[in-house]
Length: 594
Image (tube, rainbow, N blue to C red; front, side):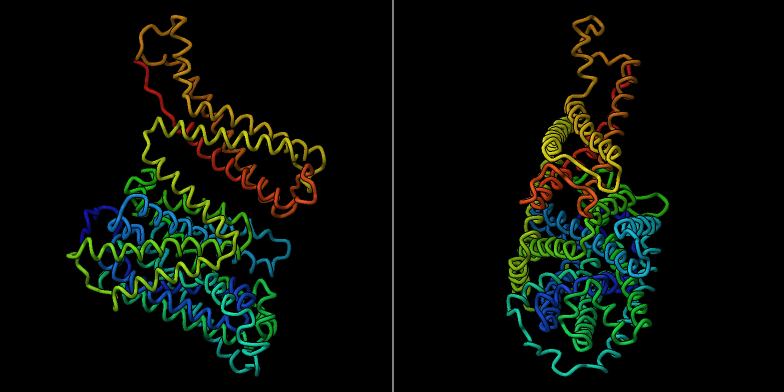
C-alpha cells in the first residue's frame, strides 16, 4: 500500500520471508566476525564474550524500535524515511547520510576482508585490487535485480551458518581449562569491554538492511518484525558460540595477534584442512555482508535522491531490471574509494560510528513520531515504550564515547561534508557551480602548495619516471585551478562578455554562435576528462603513500607520518573536487543558437 505519499511505480515487492531473513542474517553474520574478533579480543581479553552479549542486547532493543517504524512506514530508505517523517530537514538528511556512508564503509571493510583471506593462498596478490574487483562484481549483481542478488545471499547465508556452527562445536570439544580466566576475565577492565562493544557493533548491523529494503518486502507487517528480531537472536547466538569456542581453542592473546583469527582457530583444530575450511567460510561471510551492505546503501541514496536531497539522477530505476542502478553504481564507486585504505579494522570502526549516529537519530525520531503521528497504523509496537528508545539512545552515546580518536575525527569530517551536501542541494544550479568551482580552487591551491613543499617520489619507478609522475601531479593542480574558474564562470558567459564590446554580439540575451558553442564545449570536455584522469592518478598516489611506495622527501623525518596524513587528506579532497568539477564540465549544456 502507498505510505505517506510514496509512489508504487518504482520498486516491486519481490522478497518473501526467507529472502528477507537471509538479508538480515547474511549481512550480520558476515565478514565482521572474521575481521574484528581479533581486535576486539585485544581490547577486552576473554571478556570479548561479554562484549558480543552487550552488542546483541543493545541491537535487540534497537531492532524492536526499527520493527515498529518499518511496519508503520514500509518503504525503501530505512532510517532516513523514519526520521524524515518525524522531524525532516537537516536531521533526516543527516540520518540518511550516515547510514549511507556506514553501509559503504561496511561494504569496503568486507571487500578488504575477502581480499586478505584470498591473499593467504595467493602470495603477492594486491588486496586492494582484489577488493575493487569484488566490489565491481557485486555492483553488477545488484544492478541485474534484487531478486537475483538475494538468491545468491540466501545460498551463501545457509552455507555460512552451517559452517560456523560446525566449527564451534568441534572447538568446544577441545576447550582449554582456564581459557576465560587467564590472566582474568576482564584484563582491560570495563572500559576495554565497552571499547570492544563499540568496535564489534558493526557485526550486528544486519537487521537495518531489512528496514532499508522495506519497500520490496512482501507482507511487511508480518515479515519485517519477525526477520529483524530473528536476525539479531540468531546472529548473537552464533557470535557468542564462535567467540567461546575460539577463546577455548587458542586463547585471547593468540586471537589478538592475528589479522585472520578464525583461520588460526581452524588451523589449530584441524591443521591445513581446518585452515582452508575456515578461509572458505570467511570468504563466504565477507561476500554475504558486502552484498547486503551494497543493497542497503543503494536504497538509502535512492530515497535521498527521490526526495531531492541528493542529485535527482540517482533516483532513476532501470526500465528492465527495476533496480536503482545509478544509486548502486555510485555506492559501489564510493565504497571502492574507501577500500583503497586497505585497513579493515579502521573501516570497521568508521562503519560502526556511522551506524551508531544514524541509529541515534532514528531512535529519537521514534519518540517524535509517536507524538506527531499518533494515528499512523502500527501493526507492531515496540514493547516497554518509551523505555526501549531511551535505552537505545543511551547505549549509542555510550559506545560512541569509547571509540578511537581517529574514528571520531573521521566522523566529524563526515558530518561537515554531509552538511555541505545538504546546503548544496538547496542552492540554485548557478550557485552550485560557483560553490563547486570555489571548493575545487581551494583544494587545487592547497595541493599545489603541499607538493611544492614536500615533493613526491615513487619508490618503485626509475628516478626519471618518478619525476614525470610528480610533474604530472603539479600540472594537474594547475589544470584544476583553471577548471575551477571555468566551473564557477561558464566559458559562454566569458565569450559574451568579451565579444559584445567587439560587436560580435550586439544585443544582450542573444545566444552564442554555433561555432563558438561547439568550440567551448570541446574545450570543456577536454578539461573535464583531464580532471577525471588526474583524479584517478591522485587516488593511486594516496594508496601508494599508504603502501609505502610513494614518499614525500621534503617532509622532515621527525614528524613525517603526521604530515603525510595531512597531505593525504588534502589529496583526497583534491580527488573529490576534481571528480565533481570534471563531471560538471562534462554535463554542462548551452542553449542552441537561434
